Amino acid sequence: MSGRTAVLRATRAAAPLLSNASRTPIFRAIPAAQRTFSLSASRSKSDVVRETEVPVSMYSPDSKGAAGSTSDHFSIPVNRDDAKPKPFPAEEDADVVPLTKRVWREMPPMMQKMSVMDKVVVVTGGARGLGNHMARACAEAGAKALVIFDVNQELGDEAAAELHQKTGLPVSFFKVDVRDGAAINAAVDACVETYGAPDVLINSAGIADSNIKAETYDPAMFRRLIDINLTGSFLMSQAIGRAMMAAKKPGSIILVASMSGSIVNYPQEQSCYNASKAGVIHTTSV
Ligand SMILES: NC(=O)c1ccc[n+]([C@@H]2O[C@H](COP(=O)([O-])OP(=O)(O)OC[C@H]3O[C@@H](n4cnc5c(N)ncnc54)[C@H](O)[C@@H]3O)[C@@H](O)[C@H]2O)c1
Image (cartoon, rainbow, N blue to C red):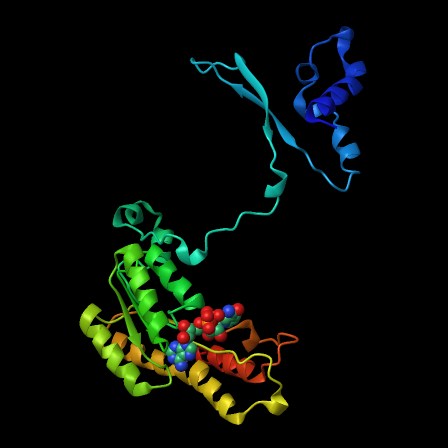
């Protein structure tokens, strides 16, 4: 049934409702909110809807802004080959728009408190994944400078260059393995020298080793995972915490754990990951 035929049938079916055998179109006779609409019920019985065109009715105000003087009725063609959703641009390609001071001043006090305006933010594991998205979010929430700590030289360098290009903010990448306390201390010292003591640390670096049965899990891998996820979070927090304390400034240290630290995600076989994240959660307990 074409769109136009459908509209005509719906109008005729409702004809007895019209007073004084009026031939006024139904949309004038009965307020829209009270109109019975039987069309959708019959149409919805069809499993497949394949319109070849979409009827459009446009009512526009006149040049003085008054209603009802112009209307336009037409159809737009439907390209049946175009049914699949168009690919979305990858999030990595999306713009990162830093929060400006001007906008920040206009924000309510609570929103200002939730920003990181003028803060130096360090993100471990910021070369990709959640850490990278959190670094981007901090740029959009007003960060003054961003520092990425990550073990992946190539990705880390790329991430820092990209973030700097997109935001114009100072961004540094330190190739640091979070298991290496001495390298962390050297990098934190260099960071303090360049930007001052950090205000925020986000510990996102981590690995999962998912789907390996406990009975076949290599003990060396167990130790490695605990070392990265748990000891690494501690070493980073200790080094940045000491820098904050030395500068006598308050700061925020965020440890990214997982729901797997408090429940077991079935059927992932990842006892070591679960244990490491439970440890991360308890590291922050007081
Ligand atoms: N992705 C999830 O669904 C999910 C869910 C819950 C928690 N998490 C946690 O969030 C954090 C980030 O997860 P993700 O999915 O973004 O992971 P990801 O693998 O995409 O990114 C992890 C980053 O950490 C870096 N990294 C790994 N080992 C390192 C080391 N020894 N030293 C320094 N950097 C190191 C990697 O190079 C990488 O850039 C992890 O701690 C993870 O356990 C993730």
